[in-house]
Length: 157
Image (cartoon, rainbow, N blue to C red; front, side):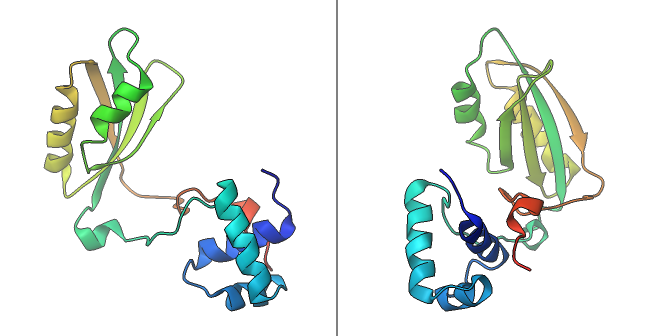
């Protein structure tokens, strides 16, 4: 999917405020509201825009502790098996297969360190998990919204 400058500007505006009206976005990018709507519809159909959601501060939900956990799996565990298993845990807010020794990396959010520990214990009990290695986050240095390329989408200006 090829995105032109206007598509990128529209996406940047929506990343900034997904509740903005087509008219408001149009003012920012120099298009009419109907032209913005057509482009947004096309971007959704093509899969460039996958949806709209609310970003909730994890602290508002009491999830003030986060950790990254490396999973080391036995044999040739399929990524789909890992995904299916970790999707059961609401505390797992991100998961990816990775290069290196570990098979996968999980991002966990929890209420406190003990909560993180309980989640890791439950994940480690999965039949394919050989061991885990975890790191607790002390402070966030950069925190861009999920799925946003900071320099790519900030074209309005």
